[in-house]
Structure formats: structure tokens, C-alpha cells
Length: 424
Image (cartoon, rainbow, N blue to C red; front, side, top):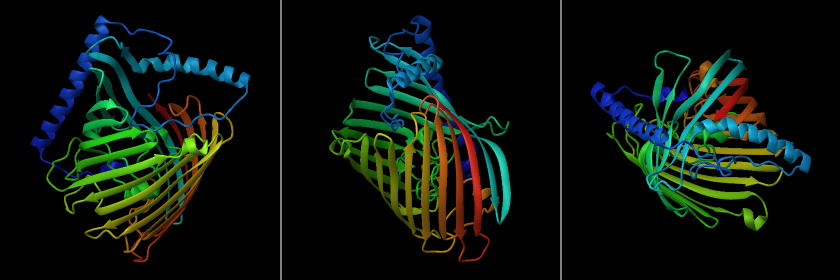
């Protein structure tokens, strides 16, 4: 998995303590769930038969364009079958219970095949890209406890890879939420999009270089929606990273994001303009993050009935040996039918110093070194069986990396990735 490149060895005693805490919290949540299920079976209702709405901290799925009445009836019939299958993830729901209102089994499974041909070499492999699961429990009406781990079923060692989510969230109303624990750090366009709901089969290389690839980092954040306004702010540990909570032995970073959705004013589904700013204390032990002290990113997400576009303009100043980065990403898409979608993407990343730009995941299998200018063109197809919860994705990528230092970072190649995405 790509994040393993960023892991550093930590002391055995600290590692064992972190794992004990993680297992204890998840075990308690699972035990509570089992006790509830033992006493009160899952109540079926017309409300539960509908498709589950996206969580407050996850983006909405791509909505289907307008279709005929017969198409709608056929789609509803198919979705009712999927609804029954996906009930396995809804362990318990009872709004009248004053303690436990809902218990969900959350997770994702992503399997893919990549074939890559480049001037510098070739690569082909099957890969379980992500497999994560864990409980999500709603308590006392306003509290959410969420824990997930990531595993690698392709290898016996290590099978357990890391804790992704382990946090507590308190929600007063949609305008104010507080989250404490290890949770996602949302900035840049693809960095603020769940891997469950990416339009391209993988995140752009802009996010791979400017966003923090660990993705889940311990900290505290506040967020909310006020009419068309969106806001987010957080304080996180940037210290030595490990598979659980890190060592808290280095610097911290802050994230502030503010946005406005012009969708209603423009008469479209969404037209969200977001500005993100990250400040990080410079520290050589900040391995949860990239060596970037200032990051600014402006993102735009537009979606009409049958088409849309997403864009990202980002700048980051580096420290230590990391150069300053500039990134641009544009991704238009068209909904050909209510299930079939075509996507295109262009990405540009430059560094003012040699060896400041990394290649993407599979490209690094062939060329592990870095360069100073990356360009990518991407063309993909998505087929949605059950929205983002069950889909097939295919993407053809053309990319090159310039290496002014001429020390082994040059890359010119074509990559084709096909994958199954399942989430619940």
C-alpha cells in the first residue's frame, strides 16, 4: 500500500500501548453493538428500505440525470434488490432508544489491475488497493463513535496495516460539529474526497504531492454548514507517524477551509467553491505529513444535470530539501446514462527545485526517483450498479516526469487501471 513508504519504526512499548488502546475501543464498541442486537432485533421500516444518505463528513454520490418513467421504475426495482443486500451493514436502528440509536458496519473493498508501459520499464499487477472496516455507533442522539482498521488480505505479514478512523464526533446541528481523534484531513480537491467516491479510479498526482498521503491523522476539528456556507478548521499532530496515533513528538499543523455553494443561485445541483489553507511547524520528524510549511488550495466542484467539472489550483512552500510546488488539476465529466459516466483529467505539477515532484503509485514501481515537472492526461469510464457503493472504474493515463537533475527521475509512460469499488 502506498502509505507504507511513509511509515517509520517506533519503539515496541509505544506501539503495543497504541494497539491496546485501539483494540480496546473497537472491542467495547463491538461489544455494545452485540448487547444491543441481542436484546433488540433490527426493526425494518420503509425508512430503512431507502438508500442510506451520505454521512455528514462524506461527499454526496454522483446523482443520476433525468430519465423516463419506465427507466425510473426499472432502476427502483434494481435498487430495491441492492437495498436488501446492503442491509447487512445496518446492524441496529432505533431512534427511541435513549442510549444507542444506530449501529452500522462501515467499510470498503477496492480491487484493481494495473498494466503500465514506460520508456523506463513495464509493470503489471493485481492489487487489493484498500480494505477497511469497523463499527460506526450513534450514541445519546448527538454522539458518533467511529473506528476502522485497514488490512491487506494479499499478504500474511503484515495483515494488519493501520488504524484509519478512530474518533468521537459531537453534533449540535449541521452548523456545528466537533471531532476528536484520528480522522481524515480534508484539503485539495481529491484530498477532501473520500476514496469511496472518487470519479477517477485514483486521486490525482497533485494530491499525492501536496496533500498529506497518510490521510488520517490524530487531531481535533470543527466543521459545519450555514445555509450555502461551508467551513472547517482543525489542529493536528504532524509528528512521527506509525500505524496507530503516532508519537506526538514533533510539530503540529492547522487547517482552515471556507466555502460557498452557488448551486441554488445558478440552478444546478452543486457549485461549491472552497479555499483551504494549511500551516505546519517545520520539523524533520513530521512524518505523518509532507515537508511543506504553507499550503494554499482553491477548489471548485460544479455539477449540472448531465455534466460537471472539478478543478484544483494549489501552491505549497517546502522546507528541508523539498522545493516549492505549484499544481493544477481540471476534471470534466459527462453522465452518458444514469449509470455510465465518462471522465477526463489534466494534471500539472512543478517544483522550483530538482527532485521536488513524486510520481503516482504505480509509476513509482518503475521509477522510484523524483523530478521537477509532472504532466498527466487521463480518460476514464465509470459504471454505477448502486451509486458509489458498487461500481466499476477504468482509466487510461498518459504521463511524463521531467528530471532536470538527470539523476534517474525521468518518466514517460502509459498506464491502464481497471477496478471494482465496493463500500458500505
